[in-house]
Image (tube, rainbow, N blue to C red):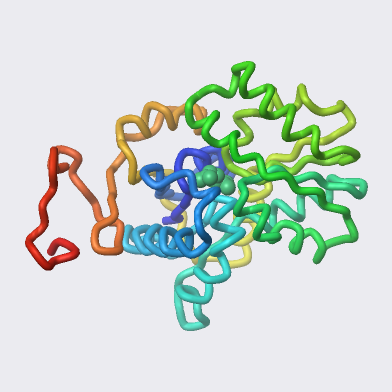
Length: 289
Ligand code: DGL
């Protein structure tokens, strides 16, 4: 069983490619929609959230976790790999930045543009990965309004087109634009319309899927083939996630299960038992048993 983790809905765009590339694998998707967006958060908060998410996926029985979120891959992947994937550990955690960087270098004649969240841009991780592969120039631009616009379902509005146009105006001379955030494929028509035809637009998701296929071929037996099952967990409202998530996946989602943070871990939660009104804990206690 392979875990796929994203800050919320966006990673469903990656999940769609993974399912098409690996139709016989069982997948568990965890979207931290209750705490998204991650893109402007403090890096240490992202590390804490990411630890809780991958631990949940390990508890669900995944030995392999794909961090579909660019922000988490850029900020927390090394930490997660060091913490959970030592030489003696059967667990592995893969990210999206290396496949994204490889695809951008292969596509570009020399000048790559990157749009992404603030934290992805500030991490410099994509720039570092691209530098390892070639002498390409990289111009980055944080585009913090785009995730909330897509979350609202406003990707086809004049507001979204104007926001995209303004962000992309800051990337003159690029020949390839790398979409460094899982939400941006939904803005593809607006992005395409804002760029000259000669600029290639690159969604890393298909490259993430093909590099996972290659990884599994190099590690035969690591994740035995299953039945192509899919479970979806989220930390936000599960009904909203199911309804809204279909837009990102391009297909209906199975019934979404709810998990929520309790005492530093993401625990399964029955929405019917969610407390209403004021919640009072016994005096002197920080958590709940
Ligand atoms: N999924 C995140 C990414 O790919 C973007 C959304 C967020 O800010 O949480 O960077």
